[in-house]
Image 1 (cartoon, helix red, strand yellow):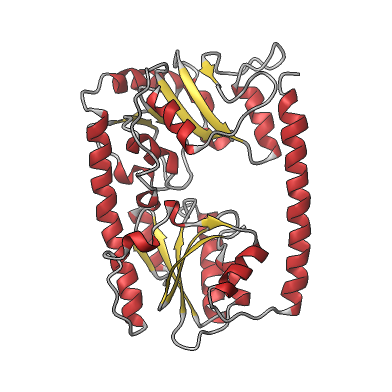
Image 2 (tube, helix red, strand yellow):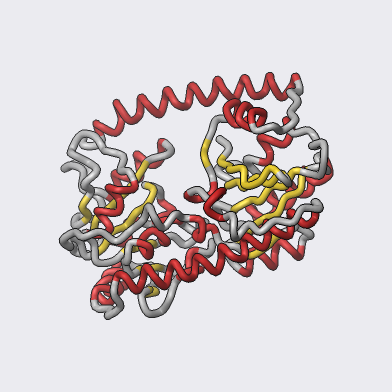
Amino acid sequence: MPGFHIVSKNPWIIHCYNFGNIFSPIKQLAPYLLRPARGRIHFVLTLNWSILPRRKFEAFNRAYHRHLRRYPHLVVTVLANEPDELQLLREHGIRSELCNQNAFLDERLYTIQDEKKHYDAVINSRMAPYKRIELVRDIQNCCLITYFLDPQDYEYVKTVLPLSEKYKGACPHLHFPQYNGRTWQHYNIEEICKVYASSHCGVILSAEEGACFAAMEYLLCGLPVVTTPSIGGREAFFDKDYVIWTEPVPEAVAEAVKKARQLPVSAQEIRDRTIAGMQSVRAVYCEILNSIAREEGVERDFRAEWDSFFINKMHTNMSEPDAVAFLRAQGLNLHYPLLHRLHNGHKVFKAWLKGLKQTWRERERAPHMSD
C-alpha cells in the first residue's frame, strides 16, 4: 500500500514513506511513471525502519541503485532519521539528507488536554514482540494503547496481557481500556490524546525500529518520556530535562517511571521546546525541497509555502490502483505495462483476500482472546 503525498508539481516532488517493502512506494509506482515533458520526477523518501542492520541496508542499497539504473528520469533523495544512517547512505553513493520523520507530525492534532491523571505511564505500541511491552511488568499502574497487524500479534498479546485464567500474561498491572473482555476498539487521535493526558509519562521500549511517531506524540502532548537505548532515530527531539533513559529490564523501567513523575518541567514547556525543534528540522526539509527545485531550473521558497502542502506525517495511504489513478488525475504521464497490470491484478486479489482474513480475525479471533 503506497504511502505518499505530492509536495510539488513544478517540479514534480513526491514525498513517500516506505511501509513494508524496503523501497516502497517507489518500487510500486516507478513502472507507471513516464518522463515528464520537462525535468524529472523527484521522490523524497522517509525511512520507517532503521537501515543500520546489515540485512536491511544491503536490501535497500540494491533496490536504490537498481531503480536508479532502470528509471533515470526518477531521482530519489533519502531522508535519514539519524546521523549514522546518513553516513552509511552517503558512503554507498545514495543521495541522502538528515531529516527526522518526527518533524512531520501535525502538532495541531496532538495537544495537551485537561484530564485527571489515572496512570503512572502509558505505552502506545503495536502488539508485537519487538516492542518489548513485557518490560512494563513492574509499573504498578500502566496503560496500553495498541493495534494488531499480523497473526503473530494475537499470539503475543496472550503473553503480555492478563486476558483470562488460561492466559495470565506477564503484566498483571497493565490496563487495556480498548479491550472490553471480548473485543478491542481502535482509538482515533483524539482518544489517544485523552489517554496521554491521563498519564504521567510515556514509555517506549523497542531496541530497533524507525524513529517512532509515538515518541513524538508523547512530547507534543506534554509528557516526559522513559526510553531504552535503541537504533532508528527516535531520540532526535529528546532532551535530558524530560527524557529518562533506562536499561531494558522491568525493574529499571519501573524505577525510571518513578523518576519521570518527579521531573519539574511542565507539560507546556515540553511541548513548546519540542515544537521549536520540529521547526528547525522543517526548515532543513524546506531547503532540501528548494535545492531540488533549483536542480530543475525552478526557484521556490517552500518554507513560505509550508501551509499549502503540509499534511500530518507527509503521506496518505492508498491501494496501488488508487495511487496510480490519483497520480494520473494530478497530471503525471503514465503507462501501464501488460506484465505489471497482470501482476497488479494479482496483488489486488491478494489485498482483497488479506482484508477479508483481517476482518475475520477481528470479528472472530480477537473476541475470543479470553478463551
